Image 1 (spheres, rainbow, N blue to C red):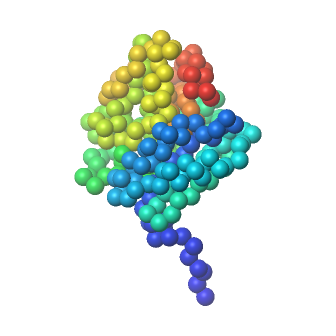
Image 2: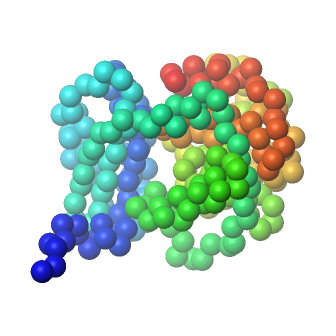
Length: 245
């Protein structure tokens, strides 16, 4: 006898989108921005996200005592809202920093969904496992012409003098980072100038500080890039506090 399949075809083949939201005791952080990105991602797959229903389900959730991971998962056929604990490894990376290895990625085809947050995350996790097998913690994707792009599950942020920078999503063809965008929008309150620009890997290595930004980690400082150790930046706790982590 065969087991009954409980997943839909869309879920089985990764034909859907999702968002991971930092759920705090005072509520979900940047929920509107995450729902807007969910809608944009769904549009790239050719369907409409149920953002109003998702917001209603989130509003009906009981409050949490400690920070948690809120996930909104949308396919053509279903909507799921789940809450789970944040892994200890995420808190450790936020606190202790990460060792990063770069890896080149080829040109994306016209049908690429790299600018959408889809359920097809197998290659993303494979990239992280590759970095971990090489003695690192995470991976930085770099274009064939040498420009730093993004991490498998995070956006790239760096400090260059008084400029707080991140990669322009549309120009690079990458996912727009919600946490990175929020950080740059608050840069002025820390006396920094927000800048979206491209940067080569060689230029990035000379930056004053480098971080990976994502909803659950907040900011994880890059303490080693391609085996070269980097001094901890005094900006890390200040910028993390700016985001409420």
